[in-house]
Length: 401
Image: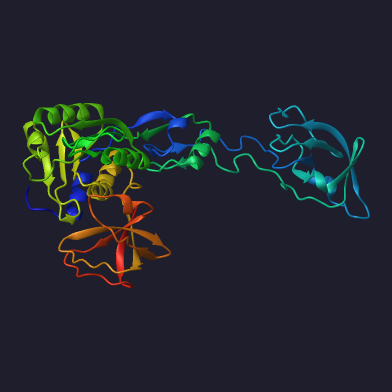
């Protein structure tokens, strides 16, 4: 393992060396959570025609000028317009009114709509007791936007509102940076899938389920999940399969300097470009980043919490580069420590915690090999290198999960 580089340098390299996925057109039903690759502009005016925002009567405002409580204006009812009805052949002339329902096309001649609650209808006559202004209660054609106007900007993270705007503009598909396909590889003879019997010396694998679920939360698809024992050929075959099946590869275990930490050696034998091996952070110092056949490989520690930290600090910048957006980059803020942290921090240290109203509580157990105390945590406290033990009331930087 080389001299560890800083977390900031490692995160920058993960972004710099990871190329964005080529954009692809996807139907609206698959665009949620993707980043828009090109601007969406309006194909036509919205609304395309003058329409009513409510149930009422469309009429001429001039006919209501003298209306009052003591002198109601009487208009002749001539037709009903429903939403979706073509009212192009209908004209509202002096002294007439048409019944119009929400979304209905305002007919020619009418320049206002009165709420149905504000009129009295008797047979074929409609009575008003207050004047209306021209344009009242009418959504004008082009009032929301005009043809050619930008609607959705490139780089936008597509949410349900963006999908509604696209659909309302008649757009059925969007050109996006697709969700990245992630391959997950756990190494180690000791690992067994949850639910299977254990022999002495074996443990159940919690890293691949964690990575798969967290990557899904971050907008990636777990395209391949593999396990390889402590065997060079087995690891090599699994890595090649992962690089072929996915856009990014995440591994856990076998990345340090022990006798059976075979991953760095296997990557080198496969011709991978090792960008860095060793990051000045705790936990996760052995983390390695490489490019294998053009695909980014983030090799994380086998300790569960260390793997989780590596994913948050370095995996998210890598995913951000793949997806063409910055929404996946870790969000940082500051908080006040609710309780003491008794350890010195020779290297930059990440500590799990629960952030509420500007204060962060650190669970008592912070061992890298266990995830139980991670349950319910929503943040990592970031303790700078060289820090002494910290006391409650001190301010710390916080990375939001």
